Amino acid sequence: MSEAVPSGRRARALTEALTAAFAPEHLEVRDESHMHAVPKGAESHYRVVVVSAGFAGKSLVARHREVNAAAAEELRSGLHALAIEALTPEQWQARGEQAAKSPPCLGGSKAG
Image 1 (spheres, rainbow, N blue to C red):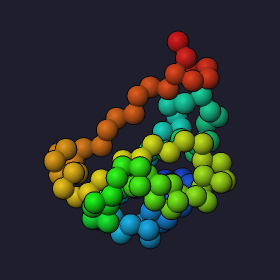
Image 2 (cartoon, rainbow, N blue to C red):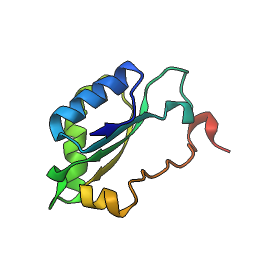
Image 3 (cartoon, rainbow, N blue to C red):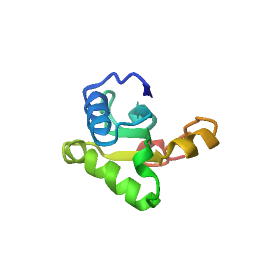
Image 4 (cartoon, rainbow, N blue to C red):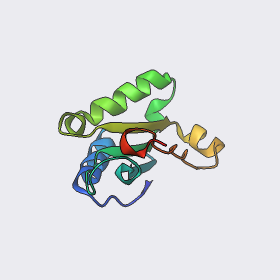
């Protein structure tokens, strides 16, 4: 498994929970809080890329429900937003093993 190195407490907790739930071939956990109108160090907005053979044959909604279930403790304890890419290894390879980029935040004080 390859993964982006998580740095904050919440990133580490998400990494542990997603690894336990999916045994992913690839996992990225990114804190994108700095892109939003939140205090520095908020750890409130995350993007995850989970690549697992266990997603085969499952709808996108089912995959997202599973990821949200695995992240439930963090969602209960202050995680405000979780962007999810839940892919099979074949889908990951077909997109050149590249994660989607998050759009700029338009909420709060970031709105133009």
